[in-house]
Image (cartoon, rainbow over all chains, first blue to last red):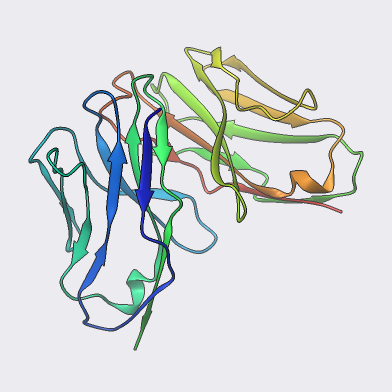
Length: 111
Length: 115
């Protein structure tokens, strides 16, 4: 079945550092891809999405490009802030329209 | 837009008790999903509804769990009897008819502790 694999955390960075979280997927069709973010004590919020190959999603300085050839959707941010500390989930919609999530990557940004 | 509203935010109860979690979806959203989040298993889809009808309940762990959606504005997830291993954060999420391309909107969750 469809699945998502993302790098394990925690990832600890200093403020203004560059962040990359790797995400690869396995899917039979052409899924839409998402990054969600979860702040402590809150639900998941959509960070960005891409619905077809070569699309780039972007929001709040974060970017991810849908790479069909490498089945990847890596999340990047050029300069992180303490407020970016959260858990990040990569996800896809499978052929049934259900979200398949990766395990989540905790990011800790220190001042 | 009020977003997905879940209640209660926190629930602490003793094992054996009945627990009812509630969700009010975003108006106009056709699909409603119930998830459970734990450290050990991550996010698990329990059940989802389309136009108030349960479509896939294969993720419901046991007969102790049941979910209903009596109308487009309300859904419940019930656990009876509850057990300590049911302790988790339960999320409700909804999305419109284009569920393949549009993101699901999540509530803030119910943190359930069974003693």
